[in-house]
Amino acid sequence: MQDPRLRLLCVFMLSLAAFASVTGAVAVIVWWMIFTPRWHSIRHRHALLATLVLFGIVAGVMTLTGSDGLSYLVRMIAILLVGTWVYAESAANDFLAVGTWCLGTRIGFEVGMIAGMAMQMATGLSDDFRRIRIAIQQKGQPWGIRSIVPAGRVLIHDALQRADETAEVLAMRGYRNGGTMCPHFHTPVRDIVAGTCAAVALVLAYIPVSEFFIHYR
View (tube, rainbow, N blue to C red):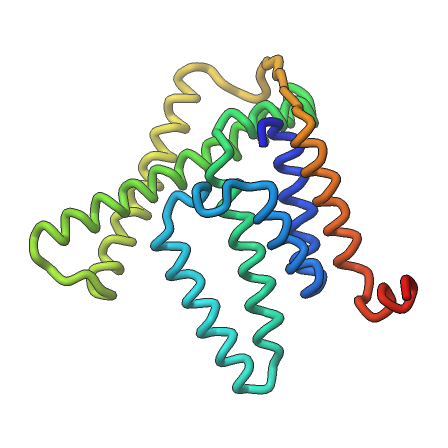
């Protein structure tokens, strides 16, 4: 999807649909299969599989305790797939462009800049985590909980240090608030169709399945 405005709007509608009902979550998964590159849009497949296993364990525990574990699993899978897709296709300047277009050159510029910086930080943390894991494997040390905890401490410390350095750079350059930007967007027909289908998925999420079939019987 080339238009970041429609991309973020689709994420918002699909997330609401997945949270609303199982029908909405299934519609979101179908949307993901049709309008995304599917597995090619996932940057970290091992992390995705690990998260799916964790969701499966939680759903199994919920089922054993009498809760609706299947509903939880389907909804979380839908949200995870949408999240991985938007993370893979979005760039840091997309949030700045959308924020400026939507909320203006002051509030919108600041909101977009913060979102873009947060995405850059998330990408940096992911890259640092991969480097730490490779370094531990090269040392011949086992990779497990004892290694993850120290690695997490290093990542948090580096993230806070980068945020402090970024704030210092902005202050030295005289930044106070707002900024000027003239965003340009390209909206192909496929993006419009995808946005329309995302809206349909949101509507289906709030329509009970029984009433839907009774109405069209």
